[in-house]
Length: 56
Image (cartoon, rainbow, N blue to C red; front, top):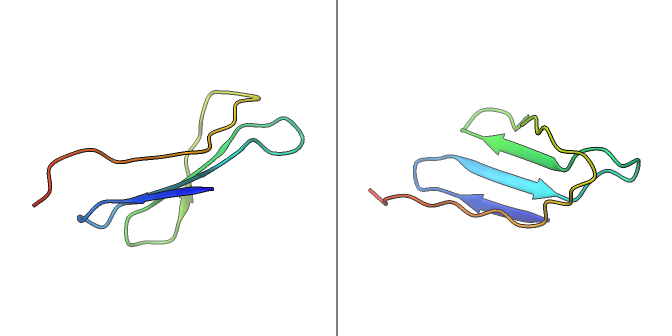
């Protein structure tokens, strides 16, 4: 649903909770295959992501 990337090659993608009421989907990419990030929340919709920090 949302994607944010940094100049250093890190990116995050997020989406709403699974239909069965599970956690939101959060993925991280660091120039290797995408990996799912574990969240300790249930029935929470994550619909946006952004990055902050200094640019090179």
